[in-house]
Length: 190
Image (cartoon, rainbow, N blue to C red; front, side):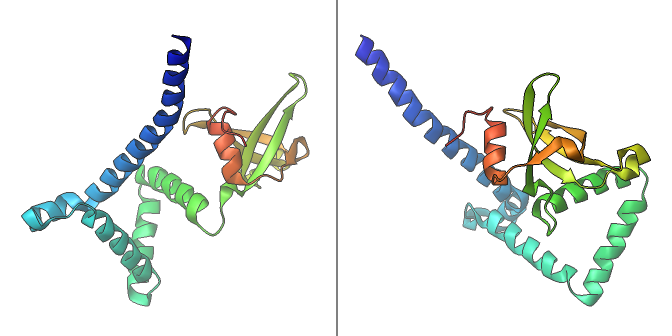
């Protein structure tokens, strides 16, 4: 009976990560395919092939990226950008989304510096990511601080702390490894 339980647990430890990974990839594929896929299903009817929505979305994003670098269409995109940035309420939502996307995928990536923050009074440490080197726009007393984002375990949420520069230690760790460590609660380590 003891061996049977051991085999069951081994089987669970083997199959569960595989099933969950396949399920999550399937759901992501379905979501990305449905962005334009639902429109294409109505047009193509029986000729619709799963995945064509995803391919169409990738092609459309690439074409829009190319258009944004052209003279006339680039001016139109910049005009739309300015209008969104000046419209009340929309401005707040749009700039947060735009800045977040640019910090993750743009040339100046925010999550590239992994740091260690020490709490000596609690004898604790925390790993985070420098997101902004200059936070003085929030107040002159913060001129010597940096913004450090600390993700919460098992979710995408997190906290942003404004930490004095002398209180952080830059770690020689790949951002992907640090994020994996943090999001898994330290379980996913080599």
